[in-house]
Length: 315
Image 1 (spheres, rainbow, N blue to C red):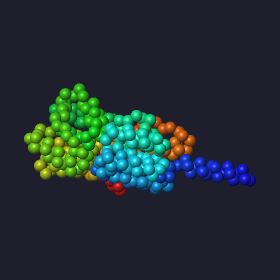
Image 2 (tube, rainbow, N blue to C red):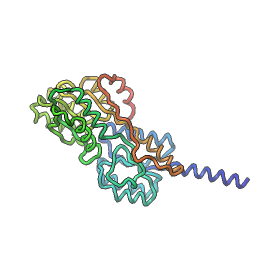
Image 3 (cartoon, helix red, strand yellow):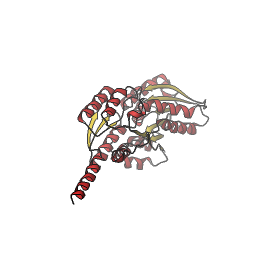
Image 4 (spheres, helix red, strand yellow):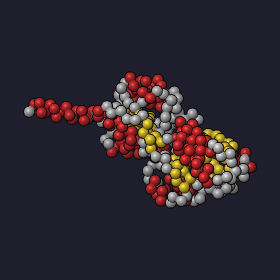
């Protein structure tokens, strides 16, 4: 009987230890609707799994994220989720987490650090996202000349780097399509609007612009506002393609103001928690990159219905 009770107690102890009870989450900030949805879904996923989530909003500053991670380490959390604001400068703090035997999972962005410093990364293939957007433009304009203005994401961030690379890959060899202006809008609606205003002024009030490619929907929505205020018809005079598939871009598509978006699912936490649970249960090592789908949506894909399906997700 005593042996049986001891064995049962051991199983219960192992089962409890196999699941992370407290996880630190260093979020970039709330620069976009997509980012807010990711935070909401991460909180929901944690609550459903009985996980205590220690949340830190970095307000787009890497130094805040590094301080948060060091705080998580000092608290002795079971794991850390990190959505890195930029790709470089993480080696030291990730080394500290590794020495403390706290697994780190990257969400939706990559870092330029050795793979042995984090458990896995959950995200879209960011280069592929840009390629999907670029291929849509190639297919849409055909052989027509198309001068493109580009709204880049935060300078130095992996989405900005990779979404630009992917788009350029897609239009390579199509000499009729040219990126004539490219500037960061920092992934914000305000930044997108301000930069688009300068693009319009530099390009004959918009007459010399065929298409806008924005690294996220929020910048595209800001740019749409700038175009309307300048008397330009977005979606008609200037084609608009962007990335994320947030609710407001579907409303813009339904109104004819945007043409296409590539989905980046905000549910990165579900696969991250699954990977952590398996790792803590028996040491199962996940793949170093867990890829999510990148689906293209256009005005033909019932944008009204897509808006309704997404509007309550926390965007």
